[in-house]
Length: 298
Image (cartoon, rainbow, N blue to C red; front, side, top):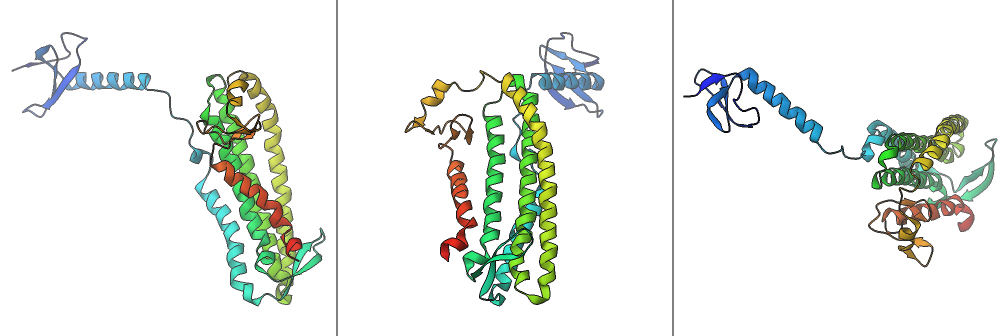
């Protein structure tokens, strides 16, 4: 039988086997010294040393995940304020009159009236969905570009810039949810004499949200401008060269590189090798069409 000891006779050997002795005491045998046994305290010290070595030798941590730059409760809030007006208008659509307000002036007076149709009633809610998609893709594209080609020398600046940019686009999304969500319900309130006073309340909420959103967004822009200037100076020369990018041009102007996961390109705007580029373009083209839809169908 092996006798208990405080340590292996050879400090270079590794722990190979751990068993429990008949007395309930943990013993560990050492490679190259089968007659030596480590005590429980020595085993614990050895394990702590091995754990520390694994920590120090572990690879670099994975890049930031996209969900690290968002919040579940915020997304639920955005989804609620975007979908709720659509559900309300669907429910009350049969009760709306044949003549509904199309455009309002700054004082809240109806400037243009139009006939009732799916396009005229759901124009603002669909604009809200479209703009939410644009802002979310902008936020996702910035994150994707930051983690696709990380620069070690600018890691801290990149993380801070990404954090501020994410919050900026989240504020735009909150502004859109408040402003267009409230404005969407004005179609229902302005055509109902009993609820006409609620149109003023909705308009007040939407304008208050717009003012607060613009002020907060200006704060983030103020912090981002000098930070991004410093970031561009630090990472100069660490991005893909113009020659490499030019090799992926189509028709001389369209950047198409499926191996580049970035959605946006600093020089050529969009990477058409990324599938989200087409969703972004679709939302971008749909926005002015939805904005002037009542005029197009009248």
